[in-house]
Length: 298
Ligand SMILES: Cc1cc2nc3c(=O)[nH]c(=O)nc-3n(C[C@H](O)[C@H](O)[C@H](O)COP(=O)(O)O)c2cc1C
Image 1 (spheres, helix red, strand yellow):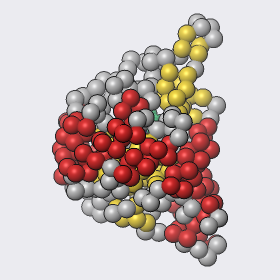
Image 2 (image 1 turned 180 degrees about the vertical axis):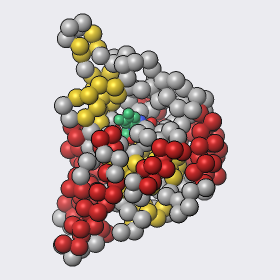
Image 3 (image 1 turned 90 degrees about the vertical axis):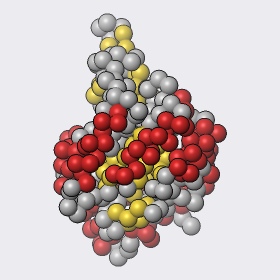
Image 4 (image 1 turned 90 degrees about the horizontal axis):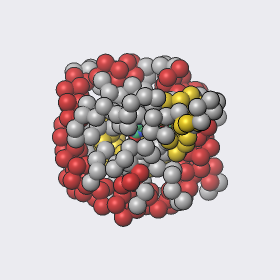
């Protein structure tokens, strides 16, 4: 079930989403063995960050609310990436990066280039002060950062978009105008939980980003809307735990999908989801390419 996302060829349309099991070569290799078509690393910045103090995650009835504060090893992550080079039959590695300005994104992309198959720009973290949403909700900034990175590296550049704006398509168009190979939709949705005994927010950061089943309909709508206006491929992410969820995204217009929260309960989820998609295609005598965007009824 080979699939292409722009210039990147994958053995199946499932990928690990950024931020979950993506900080060490060891955990990334585990996901590769679990059948993922590609892995996306934790978002990496210029310098190591510890992230926020706890509590950083809250379980909700249909997913997780997190405000980790982008903890990451900074450029020390290069040694983990080097370690992955040795894996035979290597699954493509997409390195997610974040920065506070175009120059930081360019420096990070250039540093990661040697070990990455694509770069994903995290322009969408809802709870990291000075990063994420603060740079990713303005189409002009999205276009300019994308442009600077695509000019600086040969690798495919994907842009991860936030749903925390009135119209995600303006951000998608900005990424496309900046030369992105693909967009990834969506990052987490802003949310909050309050401890009724103390009357205080549970997360140390007060608010965070909601992931998991609760956001799937929001993410599917974002992919559907993006497909209506973009010429570049879309990677769908948000609340996928079974193959039917992945098919929803593909039918809305995604070429491939990513799974984050769903990995927590089932490390072999990639194998199950890609097998389910493949069997669905066989049962219906169709191909992946034929069902991308069919919900639009064109
Ligand atoms: C604990 C956690 C950490 C995350 N860290 C990142 C990150 O570093 N970079 C990023 O772009 N997205 C990050 N995300 C967002 C996910 O990649 C994904 O976009 C979102 O969770 C929706 O997918 P899901 O419902 O399958 O988890 C994180 C999500 C979770 C739950």
